[in-house]
Image (cartoon, rainbow over all chains, first blue to last red):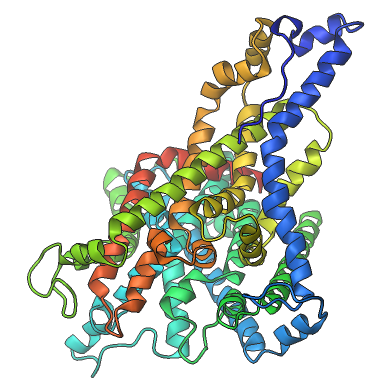
Length: 320
Length: 284
């Protein structure tokens, strides 16, 4: 992929500082050549962005307006049928509702725990580095691997969690972690919190370490209690890191796929089908790429809207 | 680091006692975080009904994995190929791109940089549906090369941003003296800048590897031939295919094989990983 720009002979190429000293003759061709070289170095990026990002982005727009079965390909425009089909699908509103519910629960649980972890390991007491590494360790795994791991962990036949209550005489049969809609949702939330808490802890830790400790000392000399320091100093000064975490967590959760695909397969009774899973089913089980593309465009629109709103909200909060 | 200065009125003993609840909480949480990993490793070699390891401890589940469908080695090779290619593409493109964005002025520079970052704003799934069609047109459907190209594209926003700030952190004088000495910009990049931005490259490579090795949805959509599946997809398929009976043991062994390279790399390169966060979090 390496694209090399044509290079002028080495002797004709002094550094930029020299341009100012003798600009008359040498500068214009050199500046031109730096422009060409810059373009040359940026060319691979431009090719990637154009072919694998902009082109598919335009294509998904066109697909969403066309009758496009998976196997037969483009059958011509049918707007707005794909969009009406997508919204009228029996699972559309349940999937939207479920995705929003999941996002709300995960965001609160994940950011709450991440903040607690960051506070626990922020001070350089002995062992803080060890705990940081341990909390982050699940983050090094892939989400699909982690989901496969918890699928075994939650198993009613071989998992240790399901059988323990029955063994202790607390229950008659193994606990079913994925058997009911609520337990399937909460079990998935637990998996996601386990996997990502260390990731958000790191982001919050960066924020915590940027708070100058003179601020804490001043507050302490003024006799502020620990709770007051946390509420009046730590939380407000941590706002940029919290905002970044919030943005990443909400976006990531709205696009949830792997964890439900592996762990619950959308069940029981399609109660845990997320929006992205709906796109996948539409495309590869119902073999209708047009409707899948329409759903994709709807998700893209919703995310862009959300990001705009979140940026606005943050800016307003900054001004006040 | 924010360090709490010790209060003058506390003795060593009360300070040690004061720390105890902290360690109990931190330790308890550490056990919860480690438990699933430790349990999975233990379960993969211990006896379970309905698996290849019915009695005692042993590697029966790993043997199942070796023989499953196209075989563990094949899937490991697929995953290694995809990861290596993704890392190489990401490094090459972002190294040159970062150099261009940090050191050159050219028409369309800001637009291209913004478009590269805009990849982050578009959901994965939104792009995968048209990419499925597009790779077909480019004769890269069901191909590990096509998959690597897509994975590298998804790495570009972070990688380009990281390499741009890495180049910007290198003092210009260093490179200018090389240019005066008759090095071309390519020579300056190779001899002077490459060593200076090495930490950035390691961070970018590590993120690209972890993403490519672990990715699930892109191969699920783009790879239809089961012999070409990367490991995460193969392990997930293995679980579904064993004729109604679920082989938990082989799945647990698969998770171990998937997790070990990631955990080792993370432990080795932790410092570089954290730097990726610092840059991202500072920007945010």
